View 1 (cartoon, rainbow, N blue to C red):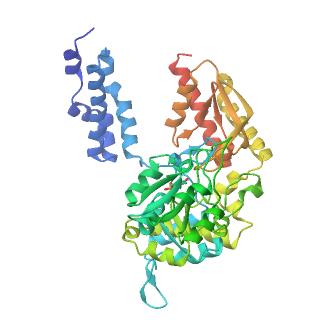
View 2 (cartoon, helix red, strand yellow):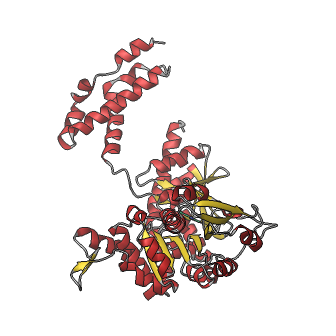
View 3 (spheres, rainbow, N blue to C red):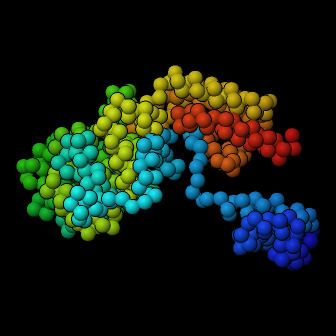
Length: 476
Ligand SMILES: *Cc1c(COP(=O)(O)O)cnc(C)c1O
């Protein structure tokens, strides 16, 4: 074993690496600074491994031997950081994977508005300054039956803005069973504190009755807030108060009811066999004065927070200074308008045109046929390195919707022959584009629900490559 000092001294210098013919060739086609950064990164890795006590062999420090790693790092540095991945997890609204893929109409609308100037805040007919929310307000009114509507950056911002605008310095009554946390640190009590409103908890985790709200309401009460419990469900001995009862209480005492619907949907998903998820219109009909929901969950649009409800309340919300801080940007607005137009003008076609809806409503028989097709393609690439089959599985809606909802699906299942399944899964993530799959009981699962047919050959090739590489690493 060589001493650390000897090993550290043997690390090649950056200049030495730059003089290698291969590197000189790369420097003709790649920015010098990036090339140097790639070399430095590889050398820094070596230093770290030596300092961590790893006994490197002399060939590990050989400049020529380091070139493939420099090249890999160079490719990595030159590639966009935010890029496409293939979602084989079967989680339709996958927050970590960008939630909703947009329909073609929305992508086209973004392109049109992004390329040039637009009437974002300009009333073309009058030749004067306008408001950005007008581009979607009429559509939202038509779709939900609300008197007025506005849109902000996301639903978290919508809730914060509504609470600040309608309840700063006052009390907001919420059931203990609805004090939820949504992934990524959105907690109702914290948002409430930041908004300047005071939380007044009522009831218990599993049971809250109208009487609990009635007792809590006083001169300091500004709002009754109902929160969709989204990503969890309390089952068994439970009771909660429907919006209609809250609204009865609120009307009697002159206190508005706000409903944070989370996902929000315009279509009754129960009609297509999934749910129950309350629609925005149903919440308003039940008496909610303000409803907030996300643009990129079940709606299948861009990231946005949508606020609909009574005109006088919406006026207060829109004129609050926070509204400016959380405003929606023009690209999002363009995409949102296009998606809302599909819902309003082609309600029959929405399930086909909006990817989230078409994925959620895919027929099990179709999913089975597609899983078989995918499995067949994977089998060709895998050869005898894995056993490939098709098996019944469950997909998930994601996005906090339908936490218990069952979406039966069929997955292509790959059982690697005596190599590590977690290594195969990791190599799939290294593919370009990365393939994100699920590991279960020693198999890698690929759910066709969240893949397009055009993705199948890419997935199959990636699996073939990952299996080949794992076998080579294992010396098989
Ligand atoms: C998802 C969710 C939010 C946050 O919405 P974002 O669009 O992610 O900001 C807030 N409330 C509920 C009930 C949710 O489900």
